[in-house]
Image 1 (tube, rainbow, N blue to C red):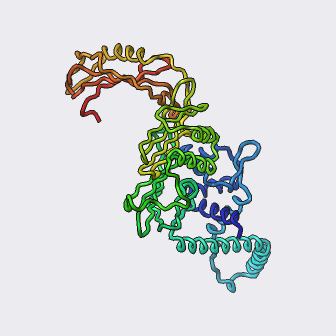
Image 2 (tube, rainbow, N blue to C red):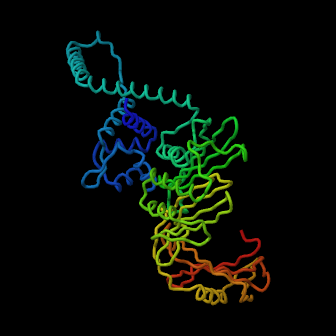
Image 3 (spheres, one colour):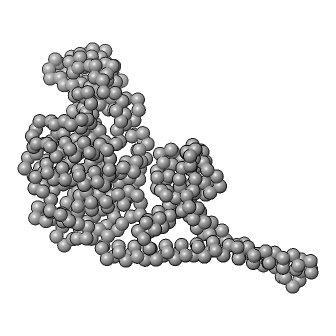
Amino acid sequence: MSSSEEEIYSLMFSSLKHPARRKILRMLSEKTMTFSQILEELEIPSSHLTYHLENLGDLIVKDTDGKYKLSSFGRASVSIMKGAEEAPNVNPKRFSALPLRWKTLYATLLLCIVLLSTITFVQYTSLSQLSTNYDQLKVEFDRIQTQNQQLLSWSTSANKAMAVIRDVIQLDVSKYQTKLDANTVEDRMDMGGVIEEVIRYSFENAASRIELTLRFRNNHFSLFRLNQLEGLPNYPPVYTKTQPRNVLQASAELLERYNLVMGEPYLEEMCQLLKSANETTVDQTLGNTRLRMSVVGGNAEIWLFYTANGTDFASKRLHIVYQNYILTELSDDWNLYKIGTTEVNISSEQAIQIAKNAARSYSWTVEGQRVSDFEILDSPVSADFYPHPRSEYLTLVPYWYVTLHLDKTYPGGVNVIAVGIWADTGEVANIQALGDHTP
């Protein structure tokens, strides 16, 4: 069996495991439907429907009107479901006691059943062959799993996780006993309904034990983190290829491999920037990508974040961390965030003045007592530029976070007033009283 056929069978049977995806297939077997029609029928959040449709993969396609319909593999999947769900309902009768006309009717019905069985024989044979192929594929999968001492999931994210581990990080999985410790999916309502999947593996051999955590957001890679539980410092992770001792060179090669696996357009500019970069504390920029690094021997942090019109958006970034020349973290939330505006019409000095004016009319209540008579110091004061969402989740807008210190600690343990100001309009976004005990 070819690898493409194996992927189709794997996708087909893994899709049939989930009741929501089975229901989608049954609905589409009756008629083509739009996204909204499917959503109304299932009564689930739209983010969940998007997740299920992505995992159905080649079982569904879109027609020219943008409606979803079954592919040939989808129709085969529906046939499998019907074969499993439909069972004949036999109600035995005492045939010999029936009148002649009823016997004639039953004989006619029996003849129809025989004819129908003949017509459906080809379909039955096809389903039987498909079931046999699936059983053979499962046996082969289990054999490889035992031989390599690995647990590989059939989910889309798990396949991508292993691609990151093998092809990007270049860990030699054949040198470890691998265990899937956890695979959780969460609907992050605090991020606008982002579907977040976190997969955790343990890799162990005679010399060391490491824990790998991989995160995917909306089916896109977001985080790789390595935590070496045993073996440091004498037993570093085992790689398929020797890793460079220069962290900048290692990062450039890492990003090249990451680009080959993910194929995202923004990675091309990052790769070019890292290739031409010098190891320095001065930021370096190419197009809409700014490079910032901190390197001390084998310990290093490298940030590649979005910049436009002199405005840096630190949340929209790719982040690389090394400890003792070992890659411990690769995170990428570039695709997750959008840019609302790049306009910065308020300087840090103007933001501080706006914050002071807003703080003068501010008050807070402690145990029923209103606190408004406080004094703001001229120094120290800080204005940190950190774009974050305003009205839409994950859409970044320029923003100042101003910290005003008070002359003493006031009721409630308050010694700081923090004011958020939109840098494009100068409007106060929020204001709050903080102190040493503020969570």
